[in-house]
Length: 448
Image (cartoon, rainbow, N blue to C red; front, top):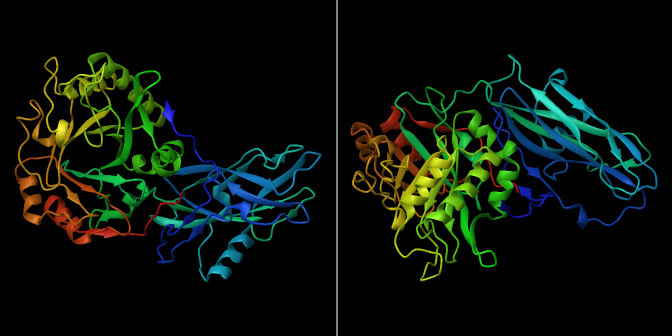
């Protein structure tokens, strides 16, 4: 697989966190330890597996877990043993410092496994697993804090970072996203800018079901390796981070029924999703299958943009997208194959009597039936009147009523994010599709 190297210490400002029922927001800040001068004494401090110190926020359904590490500012000649413990004073200190009143997850629901041993000459311990679970008396969609502290060995505990507050949102009691009529609301999210977890902030007012049914990670790429003369899946550092830490960013969506789809887009070289020969289609399909299996993805979304095809050896001069989609469907019959009705993916012929595309997603405002473009595709697979929130390209309520009344499959919203949310138009969709409004609870910003 051709994923970028993951930055294991993702020290970045989390400008949002999520919001508790008491409307308190959590600002989770990660700070690079390299900014500080080396202290005179060895100090011990906590970080989680995402490289954050002081605090982090996670979502869980029924149960969850994450790893923590004890770090020391100066390596010791001998192995050092530390203990991570549940300590309510850490939360008290946090609430006092931030003027908040977050409630602790009861200690009986938290399990801490392992001892944090820092080997001789090392500066980070082996992992300590912190697990947590739901209970009947916990609030629906509630936010709770797990207060942690490091003790032991001969190092002085850092006053700033010897404590850690892990905020967890319990979505166990939340309904899934499946609505009775099967209409799909797809979020095609620009993950260079926004956090996929933001899709969990939107529910229907009466049923409580999640508004979005699919989340497309926009976008992975098709790339050409000039040395091996092969095409492969390339994912930039943002997509790679989400895949590497899928338990934080992707699994909560899937646990509530949302499909997580990897976008595949050209990347300014000779390879495109439309110009691979039949053998290259099989090769690339195998590469995409490996990615889907490794990261438990639910399908692929093809978009023919930003490629620079030409008269290159090994590539075809005609549109061979249907063959690529077919090879992917044959390799992954249980995964969704989706295409953007635009440029070279504006149509897809049947191959061996099979229409390999499950959902054809119209370009912004497109509303015509694509039966002639995608022969054999059921109307339920046609996604119409897509909107682009970042650039103000919207559709009216009557267009969504026509989607429902005429038996089409749903609609798509591109570029959803905290600064680009347009509740008026989301309500147009929800009112037309489900007879309800959408409500927003909390927010999530990019935190890596």
